Amino acid sequence: STVPPAYTRVMLKISGEALMGDQGFGLHPPTVQRVAAEVKRVHDLGVEICMVIGGGNIFRGLSGSAQGMERTTADYMGMLATVMNALAMQSALEELDIHTRVISAITMNEVAEPYIRRRAVRHLEKKRVCIFAAGTGNPYFTTDTAATLRANEMACQAIFKGTKVDGVYDKDPVKHDDAVRYDYVSYDEVLAKHLNVMDASAIALARDNHLPIIVFSLDEPGGFQGILAGEGTYTLVK
Ligand code: UDP
Image 1 (tube, rainbow, N blue to C red):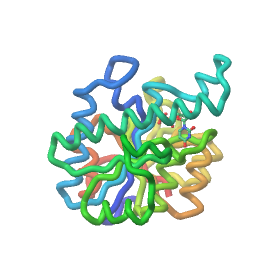
Image 2: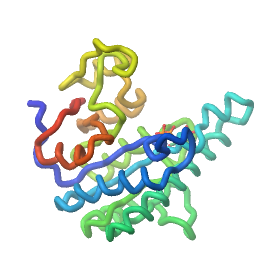
Image 3: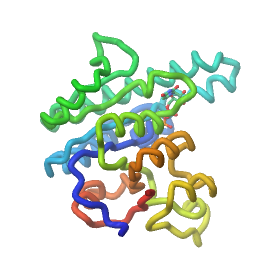
Image 4: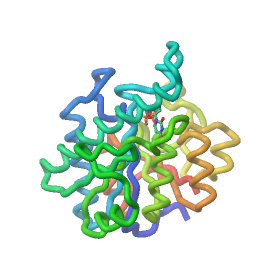
C-alpha cells in the first residue's frame, strides 16, 4: 500500500532554499511564515513534529571549498547557516503560538539547546516542535543525513521531505513534460537510478532502519496536513 498509516511523530526536512522565496538568496520572511503555517496545520492535528532545515540559501560547504576554502571550515559555515534558518523558523512558529525548541548539534548555549536525546524526546511528548540545527555537527555530511539520523533517534515514523514538486520523478519534471511521478519507489531503486530524493548516505541510513520517506510539495497549501489525513499526491520511498 502507498497510503501512510496515521503517523503520530514525523520529521519534516526542508532545504534552506525553501525559505528564500524568489530572492535567490537568504531568508524571505513571508515564505518562512507560510511554511510555519503549514507546520501549524499538522501540529493542530496533534502530530509531534521534528524539523531539520538546510542551509543552502545561505552557505554550502561544497561551494565554499570549490573556491579554495578548506572543506571542513566551509562545512562548519554551512552548519552555522542552518542555525540561522532554524531561528527564523522558531520565530515564525512562535508567532503562531506554537512552542518550539531549537536544538543544535554544535553547542552554543546562548542561542540554542544542546542536543540531548532524552530531553528532545520529552519536548516532543509535550508537543513542542523540535528544530534540529547545525546538521549532524560533522563536516562531510548533509542536512538530509542529519534529518534521517534525528528521525531515527526520535523514533519518527516517517521523514517528510518537502520540495517544490509533488514527488519523485523519473526525470526532472521542470525540464521534461513527459516526466513520470512515482507513487512508490524502493530505496535501492532511488540509489541505483540516482533519483533526486536525498543524498545516498541519507537514503542508506533510512533503508537500513526501515524509515519511510515521503516526498511531497511544500508549495501546495495544506499539502503537508492533507497527506497526514490520508489525501494528496506524493511519492513514498520505502
Ligand atoms: N553540513 C555539514 N554537516 C551536516 C549538515 C550540513 O557539514 O551534518 C554543511 C554542509 O557544508 C552543507 C551545508 O551545511 O553544504 C548546508 O546543508 P545542506 O547542503 O544539507 O542544506 P540544503 O541543501 O538542505 O539547504
